[in-house]
Amino acid sequence: MLYDMAGAGPLTAASNLSPQMALTHQFNAIAFEENLSLRQLTATFPGARITAHELYRPVEPAGGIYVYPFGAIVACDVSPEGREAELARLRAAQPKLTAQVVREDYSVVEEAGAPIGIFDGTLRVDRLTNARAGVVALIVAQSAAMEYYERIVDQLFARTGSLVEQLEHRGSVPFRTRPLNRFIGEAILARNEVLSVLHLLDKPDATWEDAAMDRIYDDLRAEFDLADRYAAMESKLRSIQEALELVLDVARDRRLLLLEVAVVVLILAELIFSALRVL
Image (cartoon, rainbow, N blue to C red):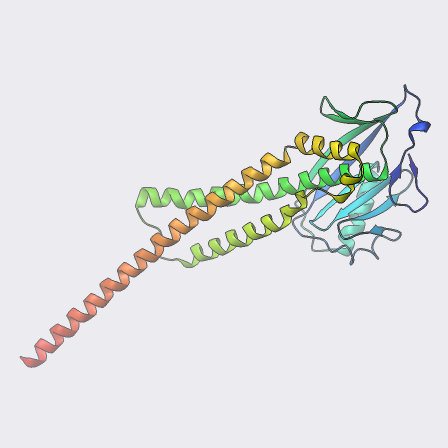
């Protein structure tokens, strides 16, 4: 694989490939819990090209890495040793990065004259330009990030289901509402973060400049099932919100009932004391 002189990304000319020759390009993504500040990482990855949406740095001999602000890094045609070195570089700059990550791998076959499309789960292209490689890296990064947030939403969904089951069996919720309030706050925070991060599913501007790249983008979105996964997460988040609103209403009603009972008891006590004083 060749690189352009600006180091903007992998560049393979179709003229360098015979009709029988095919190159397999490997994309390896890692998603973290934390978001990443691209500007802060500029010094960490010298020679990198940075835009508002990604940081790209070539890695010798014939690869490169993409870093995205939503907490994902993708290596393209980088050896396992090289990936570990770049990951160590990132962790040195961001020591608070979580050790629990999500990994996603994908292969792209480049063959001169080949029709563009996904065959047997593998994307095939006639040539892998800088922009096309960037689109592939973005989709793989999105899928890894989405899997991470799917895990978070699934955990919230399970915990919410446990609260609803308690409500179903007992007919009420625990009197102590502080743990419930903390969980509701955690769920709201997670929901806001998921919805704010998943704007990354927006189509990149580069796809408007190349009809083939637009097809690659759509094919890869369908291959990774991004739209349906996003819709499923939105549905679960709505269910979580509705269930928590119900549980919170029951908790409030119970506390209001106890408050009303306490007021009635105090009034009766006052009447009894007044009657005793008269006697």
